[in-house]
Length: 156
Figure 1: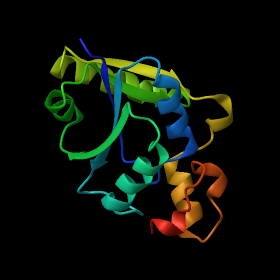
Figure 2 (figure 1 turned 120 degrees about the vertical axis):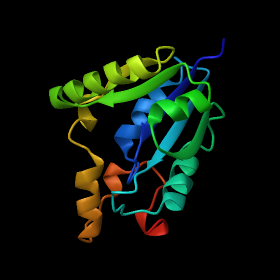
Figure 3 (figure 1 turned 30 degrees about the horizontal axis):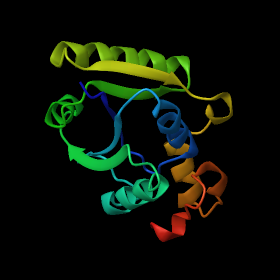
């Protein structure tokens, strides 16, 4: 059986921390789908098309990584793509508590999918999309927090 992991998130924007989680998980799975969630209640900085383009560019040389978007429940998306795992990154103990609760609910809703948590590499612990969005929204230089070769002005 092929091991397919879904790495869900809004990825607004996709950061070096997100990239690091996917790259470190490549040896664990046959395929990783970076699944960009569309939330009708959130006002994103980047349009969904821009986020898809950005993440595709980051992983263009990695055949086992694909990028997609979805709306609705993550477990429904996992079911649709025959995922065996859900990949999540954890930066802090607060992240762990949230992810633990979500994982347990997801497991009840879709028992066939296991959640896998990777701890963020220490140098990426303070980086989160909310802070990076603020830097960008106020005209700051967020380039050190974005994957190499990603220039945010190309996606705004």
